[in-house]
Length: 220
Image 1 (cartoon, rainbow, N blue to C red):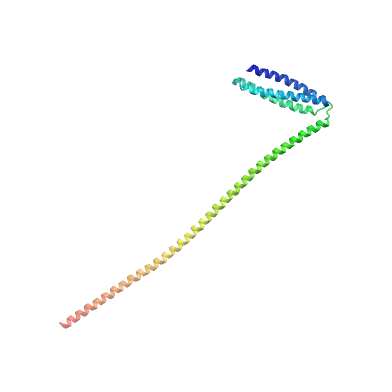
Image 2 (cartoon, one colour):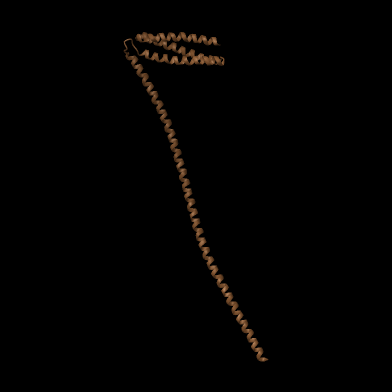
């Protein structure tokens, strides 16, 4: 398996060497020749990218030690391809006399506009996500506020109920106090009346006894 990886790496090295050489020639070309050279380089870069992808698949069949080694190689190859892509872009808009052609300038501007448009779309999407999050947060805040208001209203109602119950209890205590005082007065009057009745009864009995005594004495 390792020999297959070595074969891929040899093909990659040969291909990238050819790419580098051709990229160096592009700034000195113009017109059709330049376009042909750029097309060839782009094709070779696609082939190099495919080789790297094949390497990534092949690595999975290797031992752990070999995987660690070749993964580092593949990582370096990907970095190298990105750098060559940047060099190709610079070479496509460069002349030996450092003057841009109108078509290539327009192509560069179109690329820049497309990138700006993509960035604008990305920013818009992020703003929309942020807006949705803010709306969700605002809705949650409103819901929480409503729940808080309901709780406060419920507490206020309970407070009023407790206050009314306390007032009724106070009134009941006052009524009980008045009733107690009235009842106490009635009991005192009843006791007084009983005492008076006992005294009157005692006087009547005493009068009867005295009357009987005097009548009996007179007859004797």
